[in-house]
Length: 245
Image 1: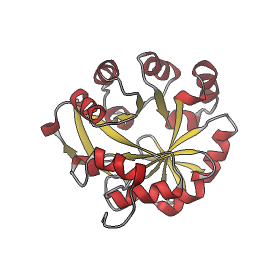
Image 2: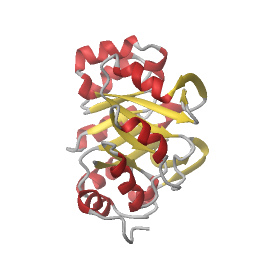
Image 3: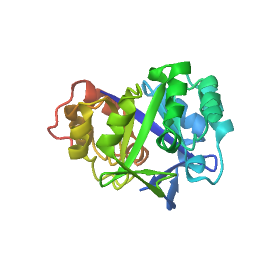
Image 4: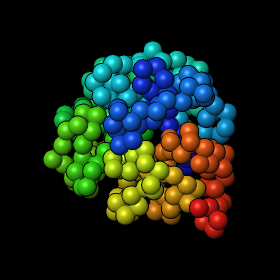
């Protein structure tokens, strides 16, 4: 398992939201602009950087120029998501240098789009985002119920040759209350899972490792200095749970 630091962008700034609610926005200007923060995580050993355009996800704007600057200025590969809702938009991010794109609402509404993208760019560069509350997937910036259950969604997209899923527990996201380990246990053996939502301690990261996910996406815990990225990476490589809080 690896640890992937998150860079969530709103209004050109690095921010964190709680449960996707814009009213809970907290920015982290003290760390610099989004490009500086992405480079900070790279300098601290990030194997991947998780870059999300929150404005695009919420349908209130775009940070495309900033994201392309991150892709240009960082050597660590980036997985980019948030409001990518057309084939041309997906292609533009991939052609700009994203290692992987994260797709949610678009492919849940139009699954045939994923087949076209995989055919052109390969399955390794595509991640399907499944943001769930209870057992149902939410789309459109977590504002719309999809009618699709988590396990059913994984089966559906695996049949379309999707290999990797970003699984986010909406009720845990940004809360530092711990990941939804029970839900992740059910799906980690079925596909490559990038787990997001709720990580607040090094113990949480080890729990995710024990579940068998491919990666833990971590945001607020790093920004709030619950632990450092080097500490998280070291813990994953050989840590035990004793004394990690």
